[in-house]
Length: 107
Image (tube, helix red, strand yellow):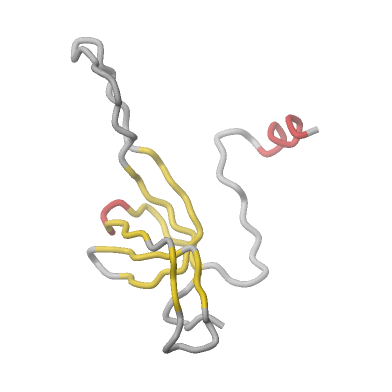
């Protein structure tokens, strides 16, 4: 079992958009806002400046040998919500489309 100091969380944050790879005339440039992101991670550090998260944990039976991969650092100022997850909890996938519309497209 993972140490309770590393809770599993759903985290929402805002990120920058991908750089535009081509030349663009400033008179034609249309800026966009930040990208809204959501992921489920193990929260391995949580303070006023930064959230450090990992999607993968290994050797979890031994607190001295525990490993993590895919570690990401998100500035606390970019985080819009953290939801602490618990076993058996059902989550609704975020989407701009209503659930019924998504179900119809899958049929």
